[in-house]
Length: 117
Image (cartoon, rainbow, N blue to C red; front, side, top):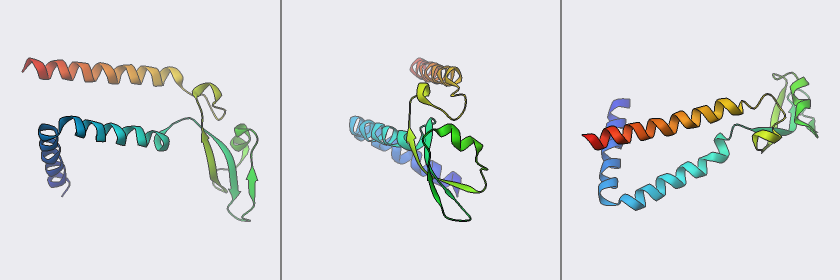
């Protein structure tokens, strides 16, 4: 089932790119930009709820959430922040920058390999 779905999606996407190149790129770019809010890695916790009692606690510093037992509290709200303002753990900024550079290089290498064929 997965193979059939991927093959079908690939063919539809190929057809869309041939027939409506710029519109398809615009839609795909919109999907990627729209998903950034959901996959953003640096979030500071602002509100938690105790699962047993249902008591909601607002946190003034996200570091306070590190002291809470993770299995007894549920995160209710978070705020997206830049790595500089991230308070939970080490933001791994260097690892992130290296991953972005590797991703860009991979795209350029694949594009160059595609043009040579």
